[in-house]
Image (cartoon, rainbow, N blue to C red; front, top):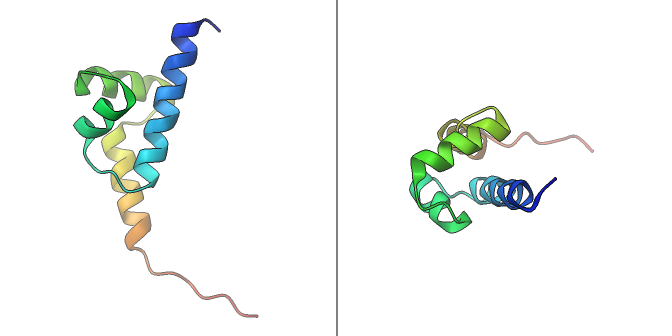
Length: 73
């Protein structure tokens, strides 16, 4: 793996972390991880994760809103 691919993978991994932490603006995420253009970020994110950042944000939002199930002890 060359340095460019390594750096891109690290950036996308950090974007995944930001999404899990609740960041919901693709442009903000792109900027925070080092992509000056949100559409290019989306293209690269989709290539690596096989989904768009918007769809992952929506899934995370849905996960955060779903009720927590209590477990029996």
